[in-house]
Image: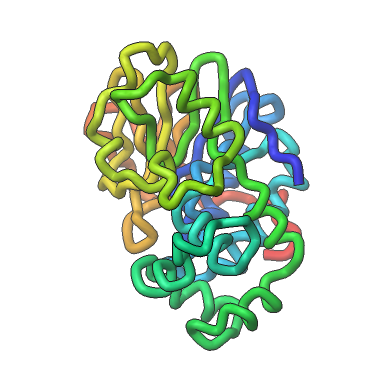
Length: 269
């Protein structure tokens, strides 16, 4: 599966999904109602799996939406990487021991449950995950590049050259024991590298509201546990949520919620 890694034009970037299929359905319909939808890219910032109630249905919804709106792409999160490495969907080195790490530390119980598989039975889970979902997870890029934005799950190392990091992200170096751009939580608080000219957009770290600051946007507002799923329209800096109530971000940016959507793209839900 070839997911776009270089995009341009308006974007709607969606925070960590984590199996929250009902919230995702509402948010995707609100994105469809936003201006310039036909030419707007929709970008998922990773972590489609684990924690939330229905990983399988959420992945099915993402794939269905990609078919409906081809200007859709996404990147890998650390949860997706851990699942892929555990199931042998990517060539992770044995010394990384991802299977034990995923089962012990990633709240993967709900993922197994969503496929009707006993927790910890990796072989059964591999067989239960539809081939298209396996292909999608294994194909996820580590970065999507835009003339004004970089979409990467956790962020960039502030003390390394941007271009060097982008080379690694573009090639997806699976020999790394723990890809920091997918896993490092402190990047949420760190500045971007001094030579970075773009705004870095990430999820990974849970905040109650979308964080918008110079050259940095953080859009995970549920952690897969509670709260509303959020998206940010770019370049408008308008925040959409899956909730009914109007809130404000920590940067006093408007957060828009809409009436119950029509779900016109939704074939099977």
